[in-house]
Image (tube, rainbow, N blue to C red; front, side, top):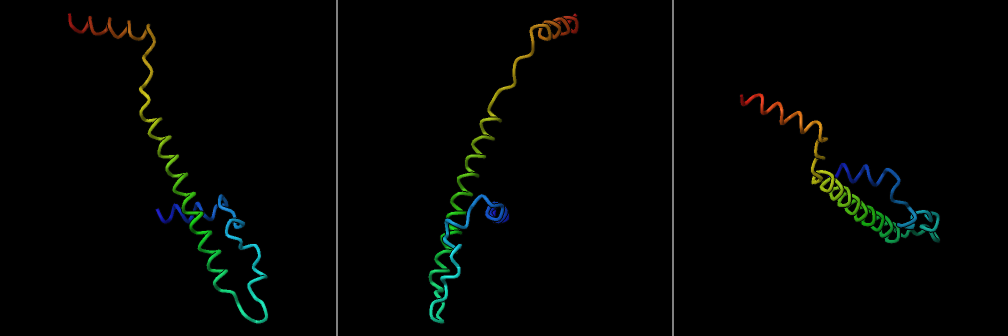
Length: 92
C-alpha cells in the first residue's frame, strides 16, 4: 500500500498548493530558517495526499465490487433452444 501511495502522490493528482510549498523563498527571514512552517507544509501535503489516496482507493474498490456482482447476461433464445435439444439427444 505504501508503494501505491508513493505512485499516487508523485503522479501529480495532489498539488503542492495544498501544502503551501510554493513560497519556499519566505522560509528565510534575517538569517533564520522557519523550519516549523516548512515541516507543517510538508506534513499537510502528506496528510492531504494520503486522505485523497484512501478516497480514490475506496471508490475503485467499490466499482470493482459492482462490476463483479453483475450476473452474466442470459444466452439468446436460439442458443437456449439448441442447448435443450442437445440435452434431450444426450438423454436418449
